[in-house]
Image (tube, rainbow, N blue to C red):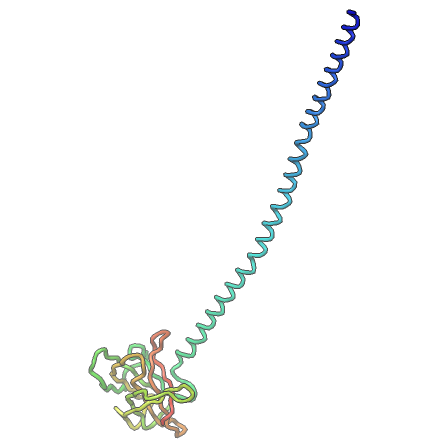
Length: 216
């Protein structure tokens, strides 16, 4: 009887030892499976991060180029407009107009005439490269605009002289009222054509310029 009991206890002990060994093997397998999961996550993160950064960098570069192009275009437009405004002679016009303070030649031979005593008074000077005849300073009033968008002026003679020559420029004291031209000149050019010009103040640099108009 004792032998049977001893054998039963031995079998039970072996069974318990076998079960413990299986549990240990199972827990060992779990420990070694964790690094594999970590390695996969690391691989995915490493693969995705550079791809997103590269796409964003490539997309941003063309936008900077477009901004630079627009700035250059606007600057070019600004320079072209100013060149047209600052010209006071041309198209066969040999007479120029400027402020007396900008005249760099000798004042000997300059004729001075006062046409206005209302402040603020501007002294403006007319000079010519060739002799012109029947030179007149006229006051202007813009009456209308023609089909081409050009102003139509009413004008009245304020001062005249038989001729304007390179040796004898003319300086007149006038007052400019508002933004619209209110002074101008007319003369007969060397080709015998009577020409009419409004005197305007440039919105770009404040210089004086001529704008030719037709006698209506």
